[in-house]
Image (cartoon, rainbow, N blue to C red; front, top):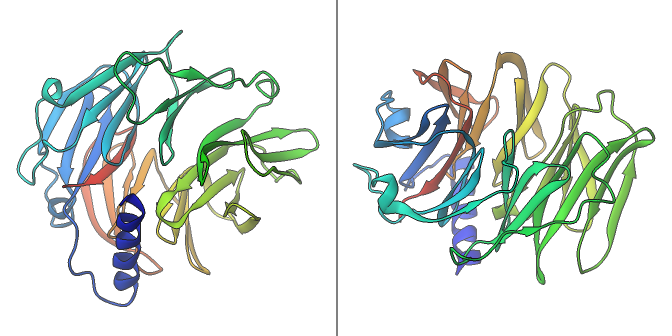
Length: 323
């Protein structure tokens, strides 16, 4: 059923590229700041309203991720929420939506999340990485990933790559001889040593679940892994990206400016400074700049800026389709 849903999203994206966006999906954007998480209907944002469906007060939010569930990483724990209580008019109370919370040993300040198909990965530090089944019971314990063989390399990042045998950790790290990419766990081996980019940092991985690809940002280089090959797709010339978002054939590397790829086309700007980004299933791009939320139509290049809305202090963005 999940694969059919992803194919449905892909069909919508292809339709958008061909000049129609009907029917658009009811999508909720999540925006985290120092005080918690706010929820916004994306259609309202595109129409110029930054008003929220609701807000949860949560201390220390580090990152957000969403699919059938909403995942919130704080500086102390991983929290899972149900999404079926959200409507186009309101968000449920935080306590009503909360399903489980898992404390993380030694905290997770500066950490981030990576969703696979069946699991969620929590990256707190190179030596403190956890994985958990998405449907885990509240009393299940996150499993520590053994990173002793490579935790000394920096920069380093991990994500999950779905395979027929389950989610496999994907690893990327830098060393003096170049950066290294590898699939860990059981299954066919895949490892590549690659030349050092002009900038060793940052190193980030991002799963484009609907297209079955893992994107890697190594310094200013953008690579795509499809399960069998790892291909360099672009090098940032104006922007200095630090993070990744995207899916359905569109990848966005952002930080100081952003680099966007759509098929074989590219678009790049050196400004503004972007703290968080998310591409929704209707191919609208949301970028948080510290003071503003920028809304772009990303169905074609160059992307068309639709709105600039006041939404200060945002450090993480994500979203999900209303059910």
